[in-house]
Amino acid sequence: MQEVVERILKASIEEFSEKGYAAASTNSIARKAKVAKGLLFHYFKNKENLYVECYKHVLSWSRTKFEEFANQLKDEDFFEFIKEWGLQKITLAIENPVYSKFLLTVTNLPPKLRAIVLGLIREVLLNSREILLEKIKSVKLRRGISEEDALKFITAVFDGVGNTYLDQYRDKPGELLNNLEKIMAESDRLLDLIKFGILDRESQ
Image (tube, rainbow, N blue to C red; front, side):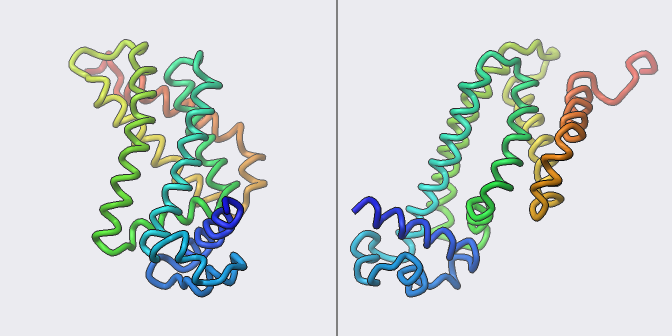
């Protein structure tokens, strides 16, 4: 039974990532999974339920990857952790293109289904946020800057840079590996800007 479910999920994630939710075909999914369509609907009551279960599956994978990474780097300081995780996210997305493409299908869903999926995403983000908030407690922030605001700003910066690199290397994973030193150097420069700002303090 579990092996059949895994086959269906794999075929479904591929289909949804290729065609999006609306255009994805349960006939095509059943064919790819090598199961009768009736069996597909035995395990997943309808297309919407199938999509939600696929999203849960990929989010669970994503959450596990983050928790494993956080455990491996639990002794690193906050800034080094953020830098390394930014690179790890890019690497995971490029090494798992079907998953990364599937996650983006949330942007074109019927409103009711989108609300369900966004709720699932919020749960995962809350979990990772708690880990990051715990780590940022070790950072001496400027007076008036909250840990929440600092975390929002830093993650927004690194998410933006990460998306740029992802677009650049999506079809050239080998080049990503060859340019790790350059990417890490840029991450160090960004961290320097985050820590010390862009203005010359003496000229203010």
